[in-house]
Length: 82
Image (cartoon, rainbow, N blue to C red; front, side, top):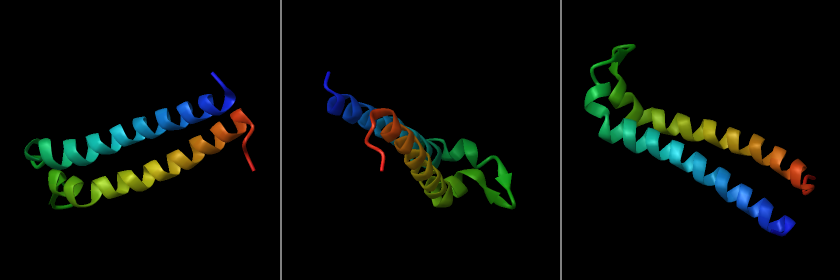
């Protein structure tokens, strides 16, 4: 496999993993498990409601930072860093 293909394959693999996490949090916790999570309250709000309204957004922002950090390391590993 060429160097460019290895870099692209690692990039796509990272994106897929992060998107699976985001999907699990947003769809799983915000829709599928909402009834179970609503039995838990934090600060007077039901946890399922919180995940549906804000949890998925916070998770997405955290995943952006994780992606940036991992891509910087990947760039260095493959010699394409700035």
